[in-house]
Image (spheres, rainbow, N blue to C red):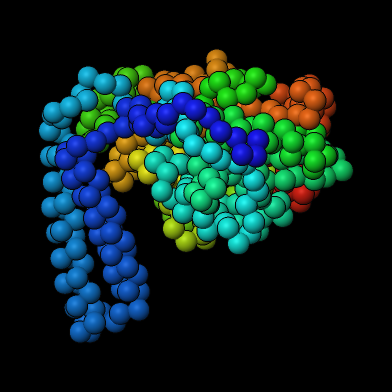
Length: 454
């Protein structure tokens, strides 16, 4: 593919359909950013109260600051609420689509370009390209691949389409896996739902896929998996999974009205058990991990190390939040939230079996949706499900809609790749045995295994 030349002109249409625009959205975005800054300021003032002596001048000044920022927050929240309730001049009759990265229809780059691997010194160019790309997945950022390497030890390398002048036209980061149990393979992007190839040009995407087949041969890989929401990029693909995404209204009142009477009743049923909920960070990690590890054991799935979640929570600039629900002081439900752009995602969530009868899972999701609306998110991503499965119907009842995944498999000889997932019948015995394992033991032996399962 070196020196590849194409003759059709570049299609300059929008990369993704349904993107919002106009002064109404611009003003709302600016206000939401200001709202987050004010909330951070309020939290900072609250922390300072811990060391201020009551009655001192410092304490009095903090009280005044808290009152001032609270007034400004209240005024700003009222402004945002009013703005959200205003009718929009354009786009009201259009479906509100989630911010998945999609290529423009058959867009092509008309100049000369080649495909090559980026050197370590050129990684800042890739980082700048990702940052400047509309709707680029969070997981394509350099800091995410650094998190993966720090937590699991897997290296990531980037292949790009690049012009003779050095302009990047697109690329794909590959994380490489190597183990005796599962062999050698690569994934773009592991442990999460989104990633894959980032480019606005179909011909650049196709050239990248063709180069990856060469990479699979040169690196002696059994396969390369590319996780994408974009159909039609490569013949060998799987469409078994869908993301369940709920468009969010502008106010809590509108959210309440949008839910069915059955969902409202089910989510309130837990209140007779007086549950409590907390949103936080590392302070909730022990409770979160206790619930998560037990649930993974019950599902027959090896659990991630606690350090993985600690690293994500500690990464500067990531909007990562833990959610923990307790009943009578005991953690029973928990979730891990990641915000990026207009969408809040819950990549990991768990409820222990004894709490199923308490309906704390429904109650937790209801509170999370309240949180998402209050924080100004426009979409809530319930995560990946198999169409028609129990989790699919659970998410659908909230009003979430399915969006099909397209996961591509590149092998040196176009053969069928191994299935490294719980759906593989070969793992049934292992899953059955794992469910009988003590939780403490699963927390010891699980992380060394699951690090090799993307």
